[in-house]
Length: 145
Image 1 (cartoon, rainbow, N blue to C red):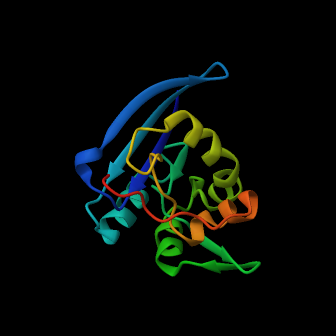
Image 2: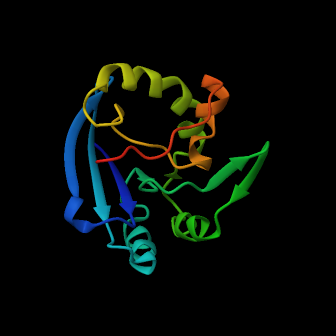
Image 3: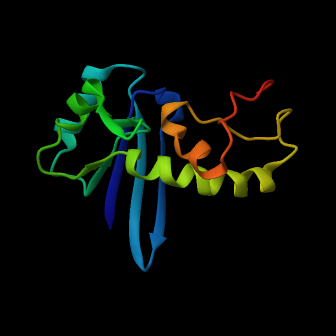
């Protein structure tokens, strides 16, 4: 069984484990929050390095893209570099292009769930795929959620 661990700076109250199967391969997928403690996140990655099959960055982007340029986030790189043996991935290569493709699909499916008709909002730079794809500026956060 493959073991994938996402180390998050978010709340440990949302820690979760799930077993799943993808294309016949079994996975144990785990989310571990560090309650905002970056040093603890780095320690956990070092402790698990070489013992798990992959790390996720827990929603942290390593890079932001704006105006055709890619900007590294130093703190995220510090966390990611703690892994020496195990691959460590973030969502910056997926979120930007896919946010523009998937958000209209989710909006059609989730209309009416919030006063603004959207289940989430995308932060400005990480959602740069939205305006490029839709031709419209990205909306701000929904109200009342």
